[in-house]
Length: 61
Image: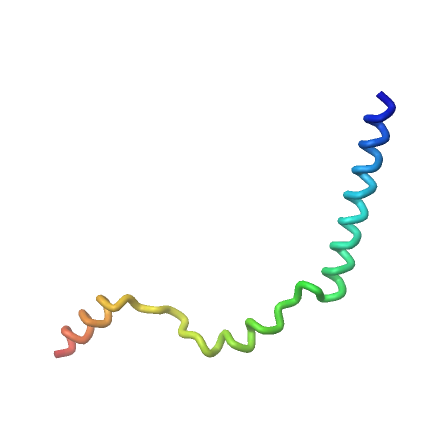
């Protein structure tokens, strides 16, 4: 039974260590996305299907 207490305490210690490492990584900017905002303006907002383009061209003619 004492082995279970030992394993639970070790697992809690490891979980806390990973949580602290995650918090440190987030605060240091590890997960900041610097690339996407710079290329977002290069893409269209909405891509229309080919059928919609043909129907709008037919309506104009």
